[in-house]
Image (cartoon, rainbow, N blue to C red; front, side, top):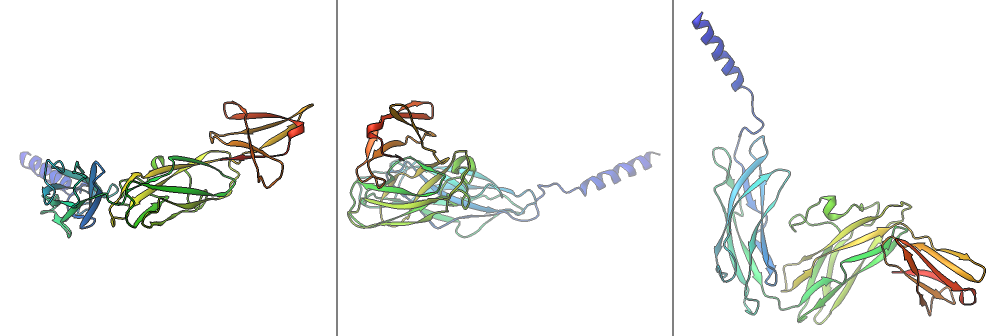
Length: 329
């Protein structure tokens, strides 16, 4: 009987050993830098070196050590040394090694930091693919600063082209290229999460807009149009737009994100009273201005003051001056 008990116990253990855990390792994990060179203007306080991952295990997770080393940039004068273990899942990748920088912006020469990967997870050992090392370039700011002209812009969901302005300040000496996008890029440090990028949908609420603007020597302003698609919806939606450095000429982006808020079409109601005209509308937080003109072309518009109660706006005008009215952003 004792022998039979031992035999049953062994069979039970053998059977349990056949259950494969979702995180059992079946091969090496793979890690690599997304590119061999990363760039940041020295006016920034942080540089990012992005690492990507492909799992060799059924759990689709892995980790690798990522470290900095002095090149022409040295610690602590130019940056803070960093050695972090990065933890990946296949649905949360790539991941950035963030490096605090405080480089002397008055120095003309660019400086570089070495970054490299080591000690990867995986069976029997993880693999570091090419490139397993990279350079982080701290570039001088000799061509000025670029920013969105405003952080928030309102427009109507009735459909229109919204003019988005970029301004350049500082020393605009040479030519620069600035890329813009309605969606974040894969390695820009922005998430695709709707709570971050906005709930307005490309193709339903607006036309996806991605491109580049070329600033020539001395040019201080450029713009592009975001097309809002007509919609009769009564809710407010929004979308973030992004600027991304083109990693060529030296410049600094100081305001790289703005929000376009798309409000329901505003119905302007004009009602004739006994001795006046009453104009009313819903502002939807868009801070719209009311203008009057003697002709429909609004060649010489006059701005009219109004009162507000929440989002409800009302203006009263004498009948003797009534004409054409419009709301302007």
